[in-house]
Length: 169
Image 1 (tube, helix red, strand yellow):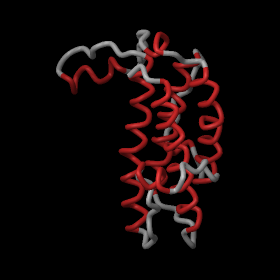
Image 2: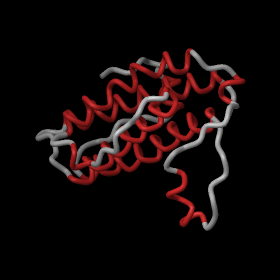
Image 3: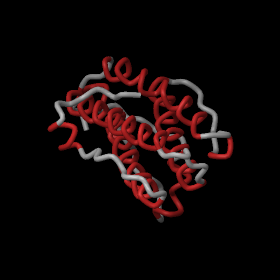
């Protein structure tokens, strides 16, 4: 994955889609104190932060869902990631995206893989964040429906049809 323009497009969509999910969650009355929703939102945003830390060389601290007392705390934790992404992607080119990017926690997946993980590139890890977030966003939308609300339409094509709107946090 060495296409900077495509990554920028996908990250813009991700920010918009995530903001739509958060706006929907915030509008559920009463705002749910739902463990599954709490866990999924915390997981998405911790994963985004963890990858951002390895891309920028920052140290990161493992956070668990229980470390966040409320959905508002999770959202506050999440927002800086979206602010950092334009600067991170702005410094990328095909060469930097093709560079090896060791993932410190990859070794923990050797057992489930049945072998040591292959190496990854910086661009591949950036694509992983988009796909990982999309996967769990679908689970969150299912949970929103279970809680009696209507999940937002956050498909990529819907974002395109809407004129590629910016995230509305």
